[in-house]
Length: 439
Image (cartoon, rainbow, N blue to C red; front, side, top):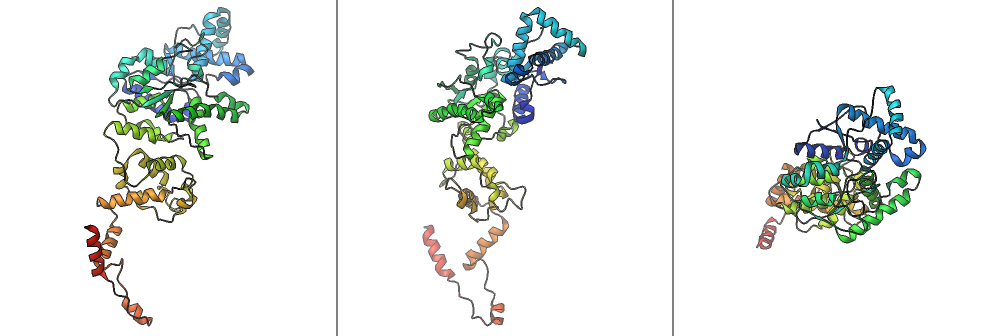
């Protein structure tokens, strides 16, 4: 394998689905990228470098030396790792005395660094090594005219003296990769603005959230279909922080996807193969728009799909559902997410749509005045219309059609209790009424 992944800390620990989509996509592109044992944190620049610059320098140099020993260039899907490894490589390349001091230390662990390998950001690798033409030719389900907002993130571009991947002021390469999928790369005012993620570890979480909110508010106003990025720290800001805003009642509704997820979908891979359901903020609106480009997804009448999507993203009342308390395999929010995605045909054959007991707890508690019961009611009605129903339901319908009741009157027990005969069912009138209604 001529290349090795450098995953960093965040992706394996917090966002393994990003690793999944990256591995699957590069594998399908036929790119030989593998794993090496022995790496540590890159290490992170904003916290460790000011405190222990020598430690930061030696740890990064050791990571580079491990790859160099195997003769493998590094590919990282993390802006922070890219910054550290590129900065250290550039520093040691320009300073022979510093490199000699580093190698003196590395000798103690049997390593040496000579600057013979390259460090690629995943986006750089896809653009400059795999190539836009190759990616375009791999697309089988283009994202035709979907409006995607690219977020480069600071350290994919800056400092340009060490990074040198693209024009730091007017970058185009990530945009080119988005256009290769058939999508429109949306221009917007805050495009090159920092996500603010470095503020959280230093006790400024509110300011970090405010910085993320600025970009999300702009993208909401522009009604983009999604934001795309390739940095786990930026994902933390725009996906996880946005979810916290949602829980506080702030509806921004901007789906955030890694580029490899977009690429995988455009290559014809299923969302489940890419792990996209693991985002904190649901990406179902984007997936529904994408599905509509390629045959569409069945929609249900009499159901506000916007409300369904908001319900799917919220999920606040899931644990108030009494059935969830006794059935570990049932999650009504999963049903809502599948419905928002347009997975109607599969849902109609799922036993889950019959597990709503019509207790209306969710309707009473819903902060959006919606309630999941509405969706379950519509799904069950559509299933009935297609002749899909549990056996018990079929028996009840047959009893009602026969006698206008779900069960016959038990005359024996009534006589024992001294009750009068049960009231007669006016089934003939009911049949006439229903026949007229059918006409």
